[in-house]
Image (cartoon, rainbow, N blue to C red; front, side, top):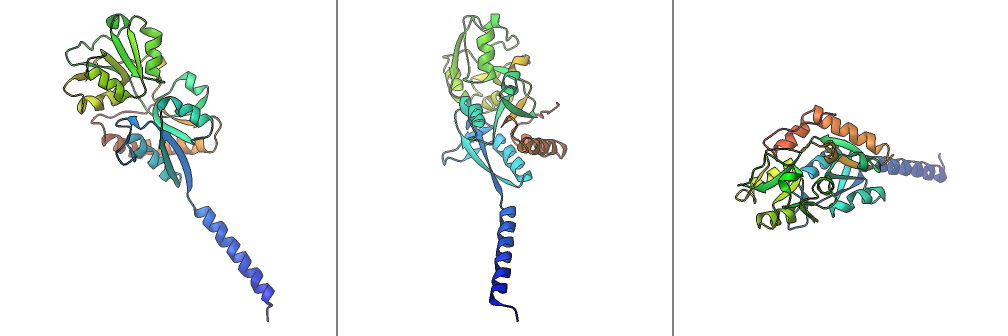
Length: 259
């Protein structure tokens, strides 16, 4: 007959095994930062819920990593510093990939992009040169590559920078500025909705290297294995058609991810 102590020992081992199995099965949580004022990529609705294409992309990545996304919306300018100080595991906010940003964080390209100007409907959008906008007022979102591009090249224009694209759109539609620079897909979305009566996206596009090589997911430098895991998830989303499916929910045109 086995002793009581023997059964107690077996029970303890079984309990420990169950605890370990439960811990292994438990989903990890990935803290993700985004803008929240950048439709259709990220928008905070009246209930405080964050929705949009970037959120759907992030949720798909988390599903592939057996993780739960915990989203936080904040000002765009502070997102990269928040990754650097560990507040977020990553940021998905359509950051343009530039050499300057890659010096301080890792960036995983997840789609191509170009920059354009949003202008009044009766304006000529075939020429986006600095000379064309001399003496005019041009806006962009603070902390973006578009703001940097304007500061570097458009000294002859009056430049206005805004906490969000939405505020820049408001000034353009009210006639307080003459153009807004931004990512083409985002500008396109606004002119299909609220801005359809006042404005259009310029025919000309800006592909200067300083405005970036596509959009990137931001991760703290050296954060492995997360960096490799997210890269594999993004690659899989492109190879199996999931990225195209999500993109098609928001835009009638396809976009690529050539590297």
